[in-house]
Length: 223
Length: 399
Image (cartoon, rainbow over all chains, first blue to last red; front, side, top):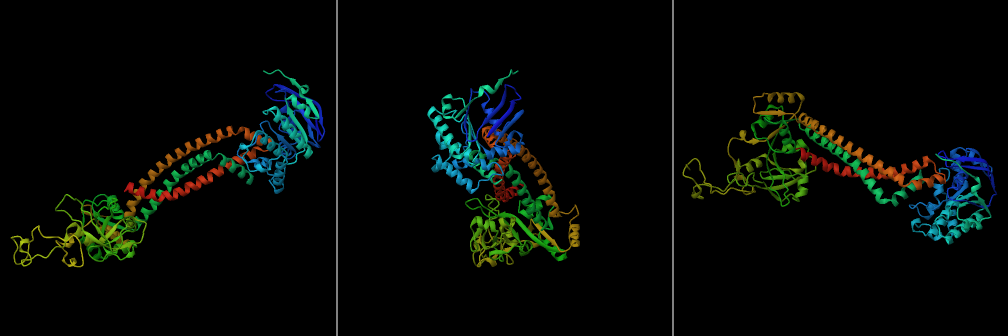
């Protein structure tokens, strides 16, 4: 279970204050966080990922209160327990498909690209129908293929939680729907909890739960 | 670190144009001062070694530096000569071994313009310099010559071939004529100026100079038309129509003879090798008189003075290299900074995935290492290849 309690956060530069008295998301649940651009949805994902730390309150993922961990441990927790899919997918052009998927195990000394992880990467690619493209440069992939590579990267270390930040931001409606369905099916398969941020209301019907984000936001006057 | 190198290598290969530019800039930045340093050190080693191996040199009073460079590197001869009697005087005094040197001629340039100094000397020179033939034998007879290894290689000449001397002035009909010499051998490589020279017996040098010569037999019986009117019973005086030999062969070798007093025959310098320190001081004392026409110099001392000038030049080059290096380093720093700005999104992705600042720093360090190590290797290889050439060029430039 993911639990946010009495959470308050605001950026030093001001703009808005995020206040979440309580929010709980069950394990394995597929949740969409909906709201207009600039409403703080990405800030919520950053708090869940431990990139940002709340001023008050707590963020717990399972039994781990991530907001209370020191930075180095938050980083390791994020790497091992949280999969992330970014807007534009943020694949590295200079790596091939397989290397992009294995990226999370090349950036932390405690996680190494073992044979088992390589086999898992190949299995994931097989599951999304890209096994034949493992050695191809990501610059030569279609938008749909890039989405699937980004998803494989997020699922590589079998995370408990997958955070997707506007993963359909630059996609046409058909591709956007396919991406959401892929996210849901693959996280279902791995048993992970999925939280997707989107401002596209046409996609909300795909999710079991939708959290309208405006209710947590309080605008502040800026100088 | 292995993973950092994996990612760094992929990044550098992907951006290969930029990587190669940075790598070669770094290589050049390292190569220039390194080559200058290596070339100067090689130059220093080479000339200091030859200087030390030549204890004393006697020559006509004038520039000490010119005399030493002439004797050690076969550069232009001093204007005045040393009489042969000085060689006899030193040898008879028992103070050391005197080795004559006559260096006023060169070989005739070949089609590529290659020519070598003709060093007239005695067999003691080869022993003194530790030179032995790689092919053939040392010159024994009048008209024989032995080639330095580099000259032999560049000219393609070998024992059994012949070589012509070059007249000093082709327009002077009364001057010296080219002499065809027989190549008897090629010397082992010594890594010194000896490799670029051709060695002949000092008497052969005198023949080229015109002091000694050979010609057809003249007497009243063979061809009276060649004799002038002042010919009497005791001697014959031939006219200019007499045919001088331009090549010394087994048939005409005995006809070669020298005119004048051997004691006065010219040398351009004399190398003296005393056996003891005391003998060295005594020889120096003999030529210390400022009124004397000759002087005796110590090549190691002259070479040290020369090296001081070279090292002042090295300091200047080092300062220029440092300035160029600083500018290049600043430019490379700027390139790195701009590259980091361009890669901000990529670094943000790595950070969001769980990468620490330290790991990002490790990645960048790996990239720098992957660029710097080949750059250093290229610079070292290029410096090793260029230093030898640069050392020679420096010697040619300075002497």
